Structure formats: C-alpha cells, structure tokens
Amino acid sequence: MNIQSKSDSYAAAGVDITAGYKAVELMKAHIKRTRNEGCLDDVGGFGGCFALPMGMEEPVLVSGTDGCGTKVKLAIIMDKHDTIGIDAVAMCVNDIICCGAKPLFFLDYIACGKNYPEKIATIVSGVAEGCVQSGAALIGGETAEHPGLMPLDDYDVAGFAVGIVDKKDIIDNKTMAAGDVVIALPSSGVHSNGFSLVRKVFDVENADISTPVDELQGKSIGETLLTPTRIYVKPVLALLEQVKVKGISHITGGGFYENIPRSIPDGLGAKIQRDAVKVLPIFDLIAKTGNIDEHDMFNTFNMGVGMSIVVSPDDVDKTLEILKAHGENAYIIGEIIESEDKIVIC
Image 1 (cartoon, helix red, strand yellow):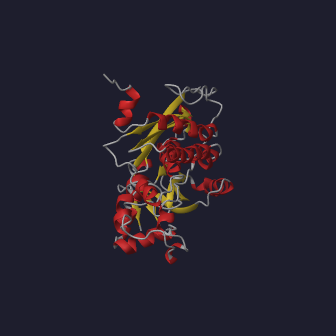
Image 2 (cartoon, one colour):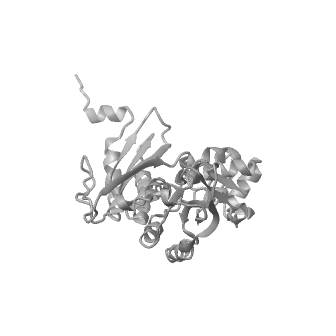
Image 3 (tube, helix red, strand yellow):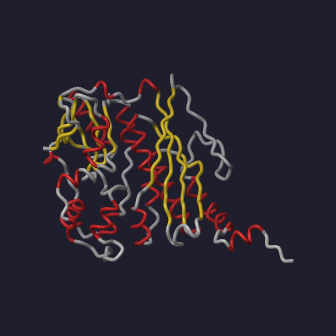
C-alpha cells in the first residue's frame, strides 16, 4: 500500500509548502530594514515580540486594521506588485496617527490563489517600505494559499498596526472652537479608496490603461491609480511635538463628508472653501469620464486631500512651517464654525 506523505497530499490539494518557505526567505532582507529598538526577535516564530518604550506616565496602545480594497486588482492587471504593500501600511498607520499615536509595529496578511515566492516577496518589499516610512517594525505576518477559493494569480493584502501614546497626549477635540483653522495635507492620488467605482469608470479590466494621457501630465491611468498612499506619520509626529493639534482626519472611503466630521465635536462643523481645495487631475478625469457630480466626488474620494488637521488660528503659521520642513506642502482649506452640520463645502 502506497501511503503519500502529508506534504505530498497537501501539494496535490494545491498548497505548496516549499514555496511558502522560499517566500519567507526572500522576505527576510526586506523585513530587516524595518527593525527598530522595540524588536526582540527575528521573523519566523509563532508570535512577534516587541518591547514597549519606557517613559510615559500612562501609555495607551492604539491599533488599526485595514486593507487596500480593490486597488489590488490594478496591481494584478498591471503585474506591478512592489507598491501595494505601502498602501496596506498607510491605511493603518495614518488612522492611528489621528489619535496622536506613534506606530510601533505592523503585521501583514496576504491571501493568494497560489504562492509565487518572488511575487509574495515583492509585495512584502512594499510593506517593508511602508513600515520604514512610518517608523514601524514589521514583526510578523501570514501568507495564506487558498486554492479553489481564489484564482491562482489573485491575491489580497491587509494588515494591522499598533501604536502608542501617553494618555495625556491623546488628541482631544473638546478643545476645538469656532474660528479654528482646517489645514489640508495633499494626497498623492486616489490612495486606496473608491476603486470599485474607479474600475467601473475606466473599465480597467478591458481598457488600455497603460498609454500616457494628456490630462495626467503624460502618465497613464494605470500608473496614476497605482501611486501609493502617502504616509503622514513622521510629519504629523513632528507637528505634535510643537503644536497643540485639536483634530486630525484621515480622508479615506467616504471622502470629505464622512471623514472630516469624525474629528469634530457636536455643535461645531467644518466650513470648507471649495475653491481652496487643490483637486488633482485624476479626480477631474474620473468625474468627467464617469459623469459623476461634484457632491458624489467629495463623498467618495479624497479629492487631493489625504489628511486634514485643525489648529488654533495662532498656530497656523507655525503648523505650515513645520509641515513644510517635513515635506508636506500643507495649506488652509477652511475653518471651524458653530453648526449642526458637521461639514459644509461652499
């Protein structure tokens, strides 16, 4: 009687364990770039160990989890996998910085139809780059091979980040008042939200998205859409060291109308000057191609603003100066007013 080994039978079921081993080996060089002072062990154990920094009166852990949505489909179509991991990290760390928390570490999760080690390692190289940009250590993760559940060439990327902040330094919007100023941090493009609509508008599965387009300054639609999400952690941390920030919003799915109100207390609202918003060309092209009205655009996309920050009028000049010194061409887009409507765009 011929009895197959467990690994042979697993391979027959479509899962290649040796490919998983190879992928891990290829990842290690990328992961090494992200190590920081909190890392206690190397990747490969059953759990990632991380030492909490000392010196805080009441340390509070802040966590965030997210993925890249259907932007992954663009990466698959274009066979370009080195930046989608940046998006996965950005979506998590940009959320936790809204509380004032400094990211400590990140773990990723990649589900795939078939484990192609070189492709997986390329995806992880993007994750590592996002971690380097945010100062987080990549201390672990999981690559799950799902034959029969996903097409062989498909994959999805998600993850979660953990950060830390002293309780007294958690951003408190109760200090916000009418007359405070709303400052925009520019986005790099669509970032990682609204891609189900974007894919429909441009028919990306069937259309030519690789040819340069005049409206996009000679870049292709595909290249523009795959531009990775900006990571705002280091500029914002630098700002928090010197300025009393009253509210931060990460502009993700739901655009202006859903996200800006999340940092504003009841009785107040953000009055956004529409003409002040520096809308990126990709959004004009989406609106034109899809015949989408302006309200729906601002209710779906970031429109060129990846993050908004609220500060006192007395702190505006200093805020803009600090952000500029850290690579952010921030600018004023509105003010806080007494209002039952949390946001008004006019």
